[in-house]
Image (cartoon, rainbow, N blue to C red; front, top):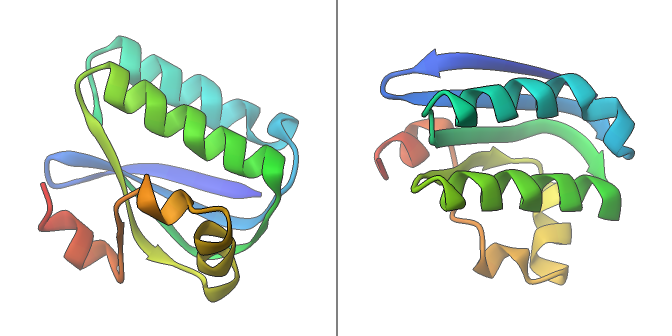
Length: 111
């Protein structure tokens, strides 16, 4: 799994790509995200368009990030999601927890 975190207007854009299978794959992402939260950044837009696969460990990571953002008074929304990952979100009913938009542009409007 690869990731990037960049500024996108007044939010941080987190792009994930590849396969998210184990928490250990995301150690850098977790550390950088936690540092941003500690420094007061709490609005995130996550692009999952290039995420090919995610399993339960990967979903737990996403839920943890969502919870951290919310607990800090912020928000994490998804803008763009691959068909396989969207299907998994629907099957696990996580689409009722996460705000999922068709694109980064649409999600940006939600802030």
